[in-house]
Image (cartoon, rainbow, N blue to C red; front, side, top):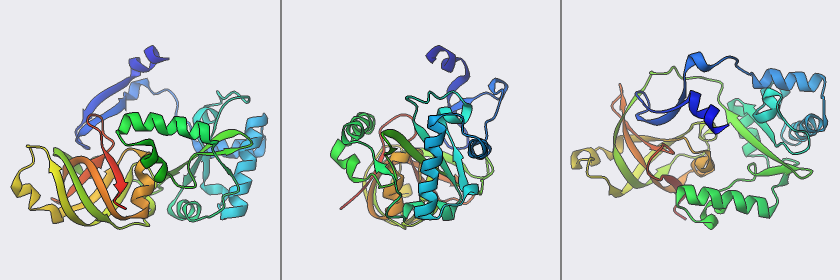
Length: 275
């Protein structure tokens, strides 16, 4: 699989996002799978135990959190029909701001938390990647992540339905920065991919790379947004309040503001609550 992946997956600096990102050439794409259409197919006729289990999970979310069927899609191996009913995970996709917030604010999803041993293994992997301690990562995980149903791991992803045209904003990399900032909180786009959160104000510049000038630092009131490509930090952004952010400072054109990009390839980055 790795050799096949290397044939079509490229790692290049993106001229719009100003960071190294994975890309797939258009001539390597032979089919586009649609998550909501696939869910509709399964709802009409489930073919195996895993698809029946998926429908049970959806029923629980609908009953407990009032999620409409039209806002639900499926991902992962079930989406492409390559799943193994005995071992494959369940991956649900939720579309739109209101359903996203309904799940985030729903106290009881009707689903179980992932067993502690498996959760710990996941957190340890993320710890190696981010440089944060497992305990810190466990602290920022919400109740709607790392779930299971009848022993089968289950994940929920969120997708915004309002798209942004590629190239509408262009980011220019300024350098690494670490700040303490107050983040708005409660924004549904903090939970979608990539996560976006509004900065109320930057309280302190903790450290910066030499490429960032003092003149740029004086413009810190123009840092208006956090953009994260690492979903493990999305809930910290959604909760808002005072957070410590390490990432890449990017200048946004054409409006001349700045944002901090988290989760790009290269040096480690993170978003963690200060308290």
